[in-house]
Amino acid sequence: MNMLIVYKLFINIVAVFIYVSFIQVLYSVKTDKRIIFPYIAATGIVLELLLYLDRFLNLAFRTFISLAILIAFAYFILKQSLVRSIICSILFGIILAIGDMTVGLLLVKQYDYSITQIKNNMFLSVISDIIIYGTQIGIIFLLRFIMQTREMAHHYKKQMSYRTTFYMLLTFVVIVINISLFAQYVDVISSKLLLYYTIAIWIYFIVSLYMNFINSELAIKEQQYDQQQDYIKTIDYLVNDFRRLKHSHANTIYSIYGYIREKDWHGLEVYFGEIMDEAVRVDQNILLALQKIKVYSVFGLLWNKIAKAEALGIRLEVAVPNEVHSVGMKLSDLCEILGNYLDNAIEAVQMTTDRKLSVGFLDENGYLTIRIENGYEGSLDVNRIYEKGYSTRGNERGFGLSITKSLLTKYNNVLQNTIVENSRFIQELVIKK
Image (cartoon, rainbow, N blue to C red; front, side, top):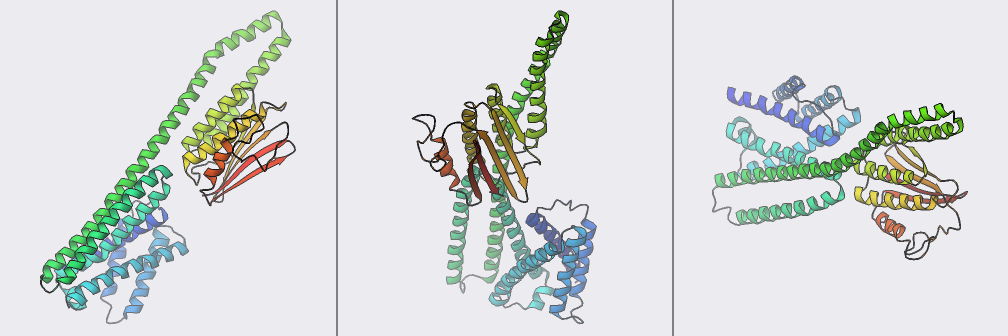
């Protein structure tokens, strides 16, 4: 009996540990369980003591107290809001109830064990806890897989979805077939064998979810690796640019000295203006704005287009008030859209006297607003610019924006605005993340 008490105490601590994992997955909470383990153990002990108050407290009241303890744990220890604490505690209780119902159907209905027998028998207690907490662990793994799938770019998500759907469908078919066979021959097969088989099915289900979770982690790491390679290439280009500036520093000093020696003040003024333009470009566009773009592929695209525009003598304004960590749509689609917008803007602004191009990113209140603004000359029919083949610059052109339009039709969370006013052409994307 003492061994059973120790086991029950242990399993309650495990239950609180699972509860913490559930909150971490549900709300992406970063908590070191080793640091808060004393609180986990204390909460498990308190929950275990409630079970011995059944003579004084009815089941409904004990359930209410247990729920209040879990809410307090989430609120005070895990520092969650009161609303989150209540929601996750109720959801955890529902999952626990699903496990209890499974135990009731299997051990009570199928094998005619009473609740008292299950509580007082070590073997039956272990079996029931495997079923109850196995259900919770399986759901946690499923939640983690869903959360990670949402973080993946579309390319990886599509591949993972196909593999996962096929694997889980096959698993479901195997389980259904085997349960059907057992139901048909339930009177022939021993109850103990059926029990062992049920446990094996649960273990197989949890392992399946775990393997899918591992695969999703690998897919995310592969995606991050690809983005980092793009970022490294961009940084390499940036470093080379700074090396060029450093290398030319000595030549710049000698050149200034030459103007001073010859007392060519007009030439010095022109030359110094060119140097200041370059210094302003490096300071404003690169150091202050682009470093806030934390999405590597978008950063690389912007840097490439900015370098192209500046090589053509186009003045750029880049505004990124706060850091951008995510974009709310498939990265390759967004890069293709932005690439088309920027290519068109660079080409159009070359034909104007005001060779100025503005790019802005605003990440605020769950929305990412991207705005590209440039001047243009000549007539422009804003109602036709997305037609395939339409262009103000001749035949065999005008396909970029039609492709952009087809890409945007895939997203219900993206609002696209095209504005023409005061000889300024504005492309704006508002993305709900």
